[in-house]
Amino acid sequence: MATMKLSVLRYLVAFADEGTFSRAAERCHVSQPTLSVAVQNLEDELGVRLIERGKGHAALTPVGERVVAQARRVLEETRRIETVAEGGRDHLGGEFRLGVIHTVAPYLLPELIGAMRSLAPDARLFIEESMTSLLIDALKYGKVDAVIVALPFDQPGVCVRPLYDEPFRVVVPRAHAWAERREIRARDLRDVDLLVLKAGNCFREQVLDACPEISHADGALREGHSIETVRCMVASGYGVSVLPAGALTGLYRSDLVVSIPFAGPSPMRRIALAWREDQPRTRLLAALVEAAGRARNPGFLHLATLTAGDACPA
Image 1 (spheres, rainbow, N blue to C red):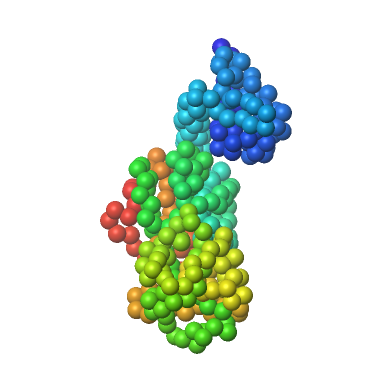
Image 2 (image 1 turned 120 degrees about the vertical axis):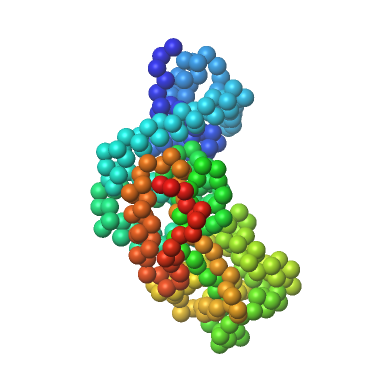
């Protein structure tokens, strides 16, 4: 049997993830014929059909599913070898892939990337912005080296380092009756049309958990795809919302809406850096923590110290 190329395994995994040859080719930055021929050659080499092809349809065969599962393990171990080798050459240099959730990326990354240019000028930082559920798999399979997510993030073999807390704020149109109020009670949200992020977004679940009154609201529950979309919908008078303070202060403040604190202890989320416990790039991880600490967003409440168990030894 000829030597199997890692690139072909990547093509096969990409097809499994994307569901079509065209999207898999786009993800792998190759032409569709190149990817299709490579996979066909792999099938010939193995003597088994991995993908069932039909008119306008292609799907993994049962054997293909098992081969993909093994291919993921091979690529994961390959990435570990590359990471160990690169870390041994220069802990503060080389490529580092960072996953960030959608509701954090726009409000943290500008300052974080700027600080990293100073702290680790030789590092090549690649950003993968996605949802928590997808970043879990990306971290597990070595597609990213670390992730910035909202806690809880309880995954086996993963270390977590809290970065900052972020209070929630009620957001209303500037002409709204609440615009002059100094604070809002959570129970007041039961009687208004409320805008939240779509299902599957961790911030939506955190808002509903922190403000259980919303789940039993008498008003309508409306949805938006992103924080910026929700902000625009609020500004247009489509409803009110609850958003993270970091998206509402400093550079991200909008004159079209008013953000109002909650009465009493404010609900909030904790943002953290997470990485696999076998990640050798400890100096670069420390640089990321310091870079996040340099962010001057007024909505971030930085954490000065760690408590026992907040992170595993790096």
